[in-house]
Image 1 (cartoon, rainbow, N blue to C red):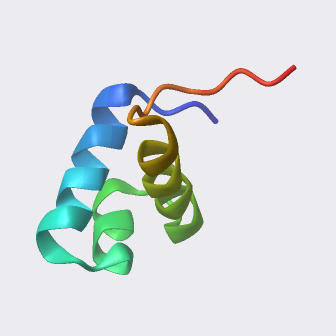
Image 2 (spheres, rainbow, N blue to C red):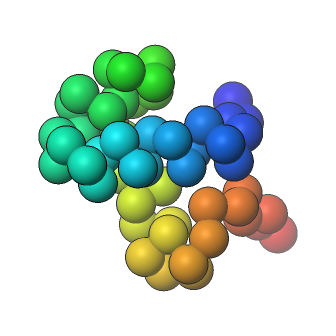
Length: 54
């Protein structure tokens, strides 16, 4: 499932403010694993854009 950049930014900002992945994920209806992937993506690329594989 593809999530909008807006949702990704909101969830990540929520996580940064509360430092609680479970709370941020639940607030935005995503899994903690998805949130952790977005955190890693932002750290590695500086962006939350979907990475096209292949």
